[in-house]
Every structure is written in C-alpha cells, then in structure tokens.
Image (cartoon, rainbow, N blue to C red):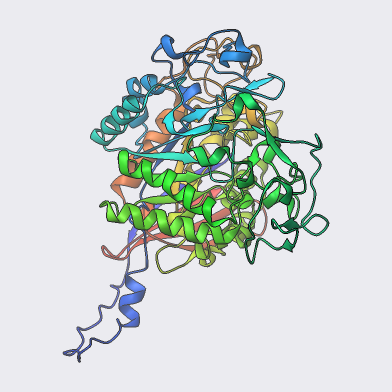
Length: 547
C-alpha cells in the first residue's frame, strides 16, 4: 500500500563558492549570477504551518454569546445547534482555551474564517451567517463570536505561544441588503445593458468611470427601509457602490459583475470602492497585531483591484513595522496558468494552491499517475516575481467549501477499510508537508473527520454535535462519533501531523529547501524529488509510492 520515505544524504561534492568580486566601482555593479541563484527572492513566510478553522465550529467557550445578543427564534438569532446551517455556538473564548491543542500539531499560524459582524439570517431563513461571509459591519467582531477585546486577547496569547494570526477577509461582496425595483435577478450583461452616466450616456467602467445615480444600472437598486443604515462603514449603504447586474452564473463576465449567491457585489472598478476597502482593512492592521490576510473570492474581482489593494495593504503594514505581512488569496482553479497571475500581476504574496490540492488527491486517493504531481510542480516558475515564488504557496488537502481529505479518500475508495483510509490520509499529509509551500490543516482533519463534503457537509464541530447529519458521519482512525468532543492528541492523524511538523522543523530544507524532481513513473508508482539546503549543502530525497 502507499508509503513515504525520507532519505538525507550529504552531497558528494561541495557547491562552488564564488570568489569575492574585486573592488566595485561607484555606483556598485549588479550582483553576480551565482549570488542571484544562491539567494532567490523569498518572502519571509515560507516555513509556516497553518491551522484553519471556523470560529463557530471549533470550540464553545461561552454560552452567553450563542445567540449574539439577539432575541427570538433561530430566524432572528441565527442559533440552532441541531441544524448544520445555523450557528452552533463556537467563539473566540473557546479558541483561546484550545490554543495548546492547536499548538500541539506544530502550528505556527492560525487562520480564521471571517470574524466580522454578519447579517444573522438571509433569504427565507433557511441558513445563518455562522461562516462569516455575510458581513454588515466591517469594524467589529460578530457578537456570536465575542468582542474586539477578546480578539485582541486571542492574538496576544497566540503570539505568546509562537503562532501568527491570519484573518479571512472579503472585498468582493457584502451581506444581501440591496434589491431592485424590477424584482428580477437574472444576470444582465454590459453589452446589452451598459452603465449610463447621469446624462444617459453609456460608459465602460473598465476604462473610465462616469458619474452615476440609481438610473445608471441594468436594474434600479433599492434598499429596504429597515436595512438602510445597517452596514458599516456608512458608504457601504449606498446602492450605487455595487454592480447591480443580477445574480452571477459564474461564467464569463458574470463571474466578475454578478451577485455571488445573491450577495451584494461591490463595484470594485470604482476608485471610491477600492479606497474604501483599503481603509477598512488598514484599520485592522492598525488596531490589531494581525499577521496577514486570506482573501475570499479573488477570481470574482477585477485584476487591477488586486494590484492596487494588495500593494496598498503591504505598504501600510510595512510602515507599521510589519514588512512580512502576508496576503494570500482564494483562486479557485486547478490550473496554475489561472492562479499564478494573481501573484505576478495582482501582487498577492501567494494563492491557495488548488492545483496542488487536486494533484495530491489524485495521486494519494485515486491512484492517478505520478505525472499528476509532476505536471503541477513543473509550472512553479509561473509564480516567480521580484518578491515571491511558489515556495510561498499555501497548500491544503481540503476545505470548508469543497470537502475534507477524509471525505475524498472515503468517496474515492468506497470498499476500503479504515486501515487503508488512514494510510491514504497519511500519505496525502506527507506529500503536502514534504513538498514546497506552507501547509494548512483544516480543523477536524487531524481527528479523521469525513462527511459528504460541499459547504455545510464539511463544517462539523469539534465539540459534541447535535446535528443529525453529522452524527451519521464515520471518522477515520477512531470509533468515536460526533456525539463526543474531538480534541484527542492521541488520534493517529494528530500524531502523524505533529511528527511531520517536528521532522520538517528539525530538517529545515524539508520545509523550504530548493525542490527538484528526480523521478516520476509514467503510471501509478514512484514520485521522487529533492529538497536541498544550499547553505548546509545537504540534499534530502523524498520518495512516495501510490502503487
């Protein structure tokens, strides 16, 4: 069955060291090719190991905030611990209490799903904003999770334990408060329905912005009176700050201009919107010692926005003494040609590595050829800029939208017993940890969580659940069910991840050494690559086998 091995060998011959150049003229000449090759452009954050969690689903430290200070039934408070689509009760106080559990995995960075104040319930009351992606107030923590003071306490205590804190942030949309007079929501294209300035003249917002009012849009935007002032900062209540073109079909132009599942799609081509979003997140950099941002729905926002916004956030953080502030984006695609431009042109520090995630699943879970891995890693050059490269990519095996690695190995191998599922799960983690990039553990994966995947089916609580669908889930490597808490440091996957973390920290080349392919079988079989520490002149050979 699948196995992984790591072999360390001192290089037989020392790498040649360039002689010091003769006295340089004034001004000094450029660095030599040898020096440039030996000192590649690297962001400081290439040795991180992150732990990603939804605060609502991780730990409940206080029952007092379960309803977010609201009264009424679940359609008012959003709280119903028997329904996977509603708040379960997790909060920042619970996270603070469980920091040692997270640290025990070898974690160096905690990444939280959005913690900003959300619209508690949207639509017809069938789901709540427990996930954090329906923001109304960008200036405060959602009361279901706690307070701004508790957030500051969390950051301080995480830092004291040697862990950074990353926020999940959103620039594409806000909560759904803007509707339209026509009460129609099908997407209307720019070609058929161009934007009009206040004199009725069409204009293309990608090249210039005209002065607009509510008659400038394909649909006439309107906000219900009871929600007219619900968003903070106040400029977000102006319906002309949104695209107002109807719902996205996630194809072509609508992917940039349409409302994502009905959420109000910000007009990010407008300079006022870009500046407003810069100020929103600069405030969090200023007031909290946050270490970086993960940005949601990056592919649903125009590229010029990222170039300006990411540059502004980096510059602001640097002025406040955080030169290593790290911004990475969700760019949903398994093609590096699609994801890499958000680093090279958009100026993000990295993206979530969907291409590598897809390749690791294919190899470790679906017995696909070694070329599955080779084909992705051979395109690492696409991420190289003056400040970044593929070693900063944020690697993962599954997430809260698509599903967990435990879900994938179970679905891909329906006849496998628990021992085989555990071996495949371990192999996937070994590949992620020993390959280039910053690996992420999704909360619950270290406890063998599975589930059907896809949004709510991948968001089980680590504390004891009352959700019938979750109680039916099998878990890998244990007889435990979701009726019990799941913070077991003796679970075989928890222990495997902790050992991988220890290994890669003890031998730093395995975390961020130069990676070079050595061998790839044409079909299922061996994939081998080197991780080389140029300073110590030591090469580590990693060989994996899925046959």
